[in-house]
Structures are given as C-alpha cells and as structure tokens.
Picture (tube, rainbow, N blue to C red):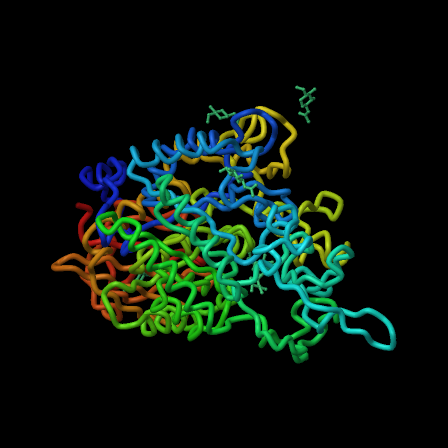
Amino acid sequence: MLRSCIFIAALIALTGSVPIQKAGKDWYKNSLVYQIYPRSYKDSNGDGIGDLNGITSKLEHIADIGADALWLSPIYTSPQVDFGYDVANFTDVNEEYGTLADFDRLVAKAKSLGLKVLLDFELNYSSDKHEWFKKSIQRIKPYDEYYVWRDAKIVNGVRRPPNNWLSNFGGSAWEWNEVRKQYFLHQFAVGQPDLNYHNADLRQEMKDVLTFWMKRGVEGFRCDALNYMYEDTRYLDEPLSNAPGVPDNDYDYLDHIYTKNLPETYEVLKTWRQLMNDFSATADTKMILTEVYADLDLTIKYYTSGSTVPFNFMFISDLNNKSSAPDFKRFIDRWINNIPDDPSYVANWVVGNHDNHRAASRYGEKRADQLSILSLILPGVSVVYNGDEIGMLDRDFTYEETKDFAGCNAGPDRYYLKSRDPERTPFQWDNSTSAGFSTSNKTWLPVNSNYRTLNLAAQKTASISHYRVFVALAQLKKKPIIERGSLETVLVTEKILGVIRRYESSVVAVLVNFADTPVTVDARTWMNIPDQMIIYVSSVHSKLVPASLVDTTNITVPGSASIVLTTDLN
Ligand SMILES: *[C@@H]1O[C@H](CO)[C@@H](O)[C@H](O)[C@H]1NC(C)=O
Ligand SMILES: *[C@@H]1O[C@H](CO)[C@@H](O)[C@H](O)[C@H]1NC(C)=O
Ligand SMILES: *[C@@H]1O[C@H](CO)[C@@H](O)[C@H](O)[C@H]1NC(C)=O
Ligand SMILES: *[C@@H]1O[C@H](CO)[C@@H](O)[C@H](O)[C@H]1NC(C)=O
Ligand SMILES: *[C@@H]1O[C@H](CO)[C@@H](O)[C@H](O)[C@H]1NC(C)=O
Ligand SMILES: CC(=O)N[C@H]1CO[C@H](CO)[C@@H](O)[C@@H]1O
C-alpha cells in the first residue's frame, strides 16, 4: 500500500550533489564505466560527425551521471570501413575526430573532473591501409610475418582459399593478394587483415602501442574481440555447426574450434597486465576490459589472466524480454558464484553497447530502467552505453540508409538482422537541430525522430525521467551499502525478482515485476526486510512517487515495473 507521505530530507537526498569519484588501487571495484561511441556523441565542428572536442565539451554530463571512467570506442586513424575498428595507425587520432592535442585536452579535463579515460584496443587486426600491411605485401622484414599469409589450395587446377574459414561478416575469411601471390586471413572485413600474434616483433609493437597511450594519461583498455587473437596453425577446415536455416556463407554456418578461444590468448593478456602494472607501480589500478562472447568458463578465465572486467553479457546474450524472474535469478547467481575467490575480482554488468540493440528496445520501453537498476544495485562494475542513461531507443533503418557494412553485406533481406546502425544514432542532447548533436541537419547517421521529446534537456527538467532514475541510482551506488553490503537474490513470487543489499542496519531492496500486470506481495516476509520502507526510485512507467513510504507486507508492484526501496535516504 502506498502513502503519499513525502519526506523533505528524502527529496534533498534525491536532488543532492554528485559524490566525488574514488581513486586508489581499489577504485574499479564499485565503478561505473560509461561507453562513448565517438562518431555519435557530439559534433563540435558542424560536419555531422562526432569528435573529440565534442566529447570534451560534454564531460560534465559524464561526471554528473556519476561515472568513474569513460571508455572511448576507437578514435584511431582509420579508413572507417568498420567505423574505426579498422585501424590504419594505432598511435594517431582519426582526422575526422581531431588531433593528439585534442586528445590531450580531453584527458586533462577528464582528470580534473575525476574521470579516468579508457581506450578501445583493436588488437586483432589492422586496416589494410596500415603501413605494416603495405610492407607485408612487399615481404619487407620484419613486417612480412605481421599478418597471416597462406598459399592457395589448388583444386583441379583452380585456386582456392587455404581452408573453409568464414568471416564474421559473411563469406570466406581469406582474400587473395595478387602482389604477394598468397591469401591473407581476415576474420572480419576484407579491409581488416588479421595480425599474426605468433610473431614476436608484432607482439612487441602492440605493447609499444599500450605504452604510447599510457604516457598520454590513458588508464586502461578495452580489448576488442580478444578471443579471436590466435588461430590454430594447422589451418584445418572447421566443422559445420548444423545451425538450422543459416546460409553457407554466414559466419554461424561453422563451429569455430580453430579460430576462437585458443589458450595462447590468455598468455598474451598476462603480458599486457604485467606491462600496465609495471608502467606506474604507484598509480591507480589500470583497468582491462575484455570483450569475449563465449561460454561462462572461458569468459571467467580472463579474470585470472589479467582482465579487470571480463564483460558479463548476460543481459544481452542470455536474457531478454521473454526471460522470467527465475531466469534472471539463475544467471545473476551463476555469475556471482563463479567469480574466482579473491577480493581483487568483482562482478560486472553490461547494460548495452554499440554492437547490440539498445536496452530500452531489447526489453521494451516499460522496462527501459530495469537493467540500469539491476546493474547499479548489484555489486561490482556497471558498464553503460551512452544514451542508455536517458532510455534512448533504436531507430529503424531502411536498407538504403544502412551504413554498417555488417548490414550492407547481409543484403536487403537480412540486413536488419546484422546491422548495428539502429543503436548508433546520434546522442539526443536537446530538442534543437539534430538533437543538439550537431549544428548541421545532415548527420552521418540520421537522428532518431523521437528526439523532440526523448532528450537529455527534457529529462533533466522533468520530475520523473530515465535520467533522474539513473542519477539517483549512481548516487546510491557510491554509498557503503552498495559498495560493501551483502547480496541476496530471491524469488518473491514466480513473477517477482528480489535483490537485497544489507549493510549495518540499512537495507536496499529491489523488486522487479516480470508480469505486465500488477502483483501484490508480502515482500517483508519473503525478503526479510522492514515493514516500512521508502521508495528511493522506481522505473519511469511505474508512476510511483519517489520518497513515499510503503508497507512492505502488502506492496503492489505495477506491471513490468522495478522498484528500489531503502530504509533511509542518507
Ligand atoms: C602514426 O602516427 C604517428 C603520430 O603519433 C606518426 O609519428 C607515425 O609515423 C604514424 N605511423 C605510421 C605507420 O603511419
Ligand atoms: C521484446 O523483444 C523483441 C526482440 O528484441 C522486440 O521485438 C519486442 O518489441 C520486445 N517486446 C516489447 C514489449 O518491447
Ligand atoms: C537543413 O538546413 C538547410 C540549410 O540551413 C535548410 O535549407 C534545410 O531546409 C534544412 N533541412 C531540413 C530537413 O531541416
Ligand atoms: C525545447 O526544449 C526547451 C528546453 O528544454 C523547452 O523550453 C521547449 O519548450 C522545447 N520546445 C519544444 C517545441 O518542445
Ligand atoms: C493489500 O492491498 C490491497 C490493495 O493494494 C488491498 O485490497 C488488500 O486488502 C490488502 N491486503 C491486506 C491483507 O491488507
Ligand atoms: C577477429 C580477428 O581478426 N582476429 C584475429 C586476431 O589476430 C590473430 C592473429 O594471429 C588472427 O589470427 C585472428 O583471426
């Protein structure tokens, strides 16, 4: 039962100032990492493309939402075939995004706001425009072995690729080079030749790249597609996956036993961790985030190989809007129970990213806040993609509008299954031209037409908004109860997931309703919480009033709503 009993103190707590970010060796253990997609964040020069100076001008927003670190998707020199994931120079900034001097200004301002800067590290391949590749084609030492070159297989007098390996973007992973008269491997686009980590000179080059950026103040790296780093040097055909309905040129047609998750990957990661620890023994712990879409045991192994945050993609890969409360409980418990037993290892919760549909689109608008609530109340590192703090939605694209070549390659009938454009549209700052992203009305990807109502400025002034929910949660996250409190997950009913954090005499309790109709429960008994608690925040569509007192013995959770209750607001 709800009573509209408003506490003045509660309101002050809800609108109070943002706590200071943490420093020190343990800073990462209860941190909020905010992912920025630079091309779509903020355009400072009116060319319709986001840039570094744009990001610098918006760093206050990142501090305001309580982030500890910002991770920039690739900013390196690139022909932009895969929007920056194809790197032509690992130690320079893409012209469209600015210069190294702009980068230095970004880092300096971030530091002044207590924010750490993390970079994406594209370790697996380079662009075919990279000098190394040009020299490798010419067989110039030491570059000749920087890439994976193999002779053709001649079948009945016809030249064929060395084996059946497929690219993640469809078709053979091998491309013939007329000059060198060999095939090179590209597990992604043709313009992204795979680097050869079996070569010691190449391994050293990549370490030098890490050092280059650490000298410029970078405090961690997110390693892209790490599990593809090595492949089996016997170059055997991969077996068929027998996945139903998958065409024979689709990556999912094969079972990737020779090109993914090889044990050498873990060894290379350990050398990078050592390098980063040695770089500055007195500084805060450097963060390594590893992107691996793999089974739990393979993912968990990255903890003990130097990763601070082996991305936990459960909210993306394992769970969706059809999942039940027991499904959520099972996956959350499984992760918590599998973290290696050492206080240096903490959980992490990824809400969304630039490769997957937006959280509010995956789970539906009524559940837009559910993942933010769970990721910020559960212990450990919360990883949030820019725009999710205001509940941005996917934009539907036609095939003609599609820019992402993963979509273009899939063709007009399947592009929408592969394209990542929907979740990459410009950030919606306000209701002015191009949502305040750019002064130009022509932007590299179209702005979602919902920006007139769905934007940051509007959400800052509204009394209830995704932004307000998010900021309130981030403030709560800084408190000892979330940083150090105990954790329990319970099924209050088959439809209601409960998450309880306790610290000294305080309690924070989350109730998530997986039914789309209201459910009334005795949360007091099933969650062992006080009879009366205060609504700290609740999902926007719940229509519940923050700071009101509830009787937990008979509490009604609206359909699809999530509620965060507290015992006190101090
Ligand atoms: C990469 O950029 C750096 C500037 O940091 C420049 O000095 C270097 O020559 C470039 N390397 C290549 C291979 O183009
Ligand atoms: C549930 O997810 C599917 C797939 O992402 C989506 O198409 C559908 O709109 C979602 N349902 C709701 C109610 O949003
Ligand atoms: C875009 O801007 C140009 C120049 O300011 C203007 O002429 C045009 O009407 C605008 N287009 C749209 C769709 O707003
Ligand atoms: C645009 O946003 C401003 C500030 O948020 C607001 O005052 C104004 O009413 C909005 N205009 C429209 C047309 O929504
Ligand atoms: C619980 O609350 C509902 C209304 O939300 C009310 O109808 C019901 O009588 C209450 N039950 C008890 C035991 O108080
Ligand atoms: C995803 C990707 O391109 N992975 C490559 C990473 O680098 C190794 C170098 O040995 C390649 O073989 C992988 O295919």
